[in-house]
Amino acid sequence: MKSVLKQNKTRELRRPEYVLTDPLITANEAAAERGQGVSTFWRDVKSGLVPSPYYIGPKSPRWRQSEIRASVEACKRAPAKPKNQLAA
Image 1 (spheres, rainbow, N blue to C red):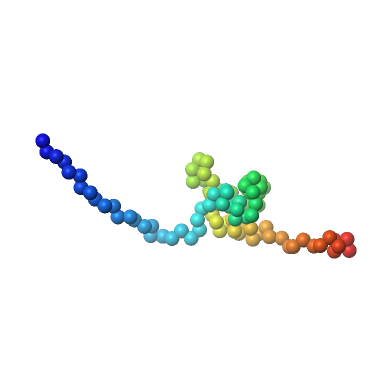
Image 2 (image 1 turned 120 degrees about the horizontal axis):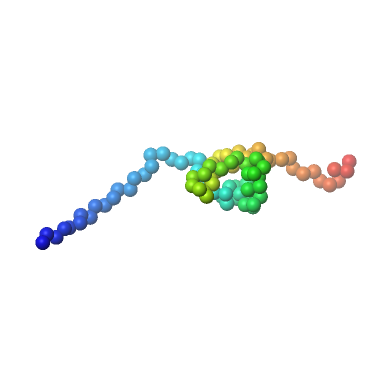
């Protein structure tokens, strides 16, 4: 009977040839990026203030980080006026 010896081959780790500069982020990460709660974030998605997600799986919505940052810049508003200036 011949014995079969398994050769111990070491795998060389392959690194991607590209650098991901615009990562896909989850709803929790996107809400944190916008400084709001997750339910408020989803309400903004539904109303169109935030772009629609990319679905990488059936229940895996993701957003490009650059798109979320652009939506933050688009939603910035002027600082509120003090109450005494509103009556004048």
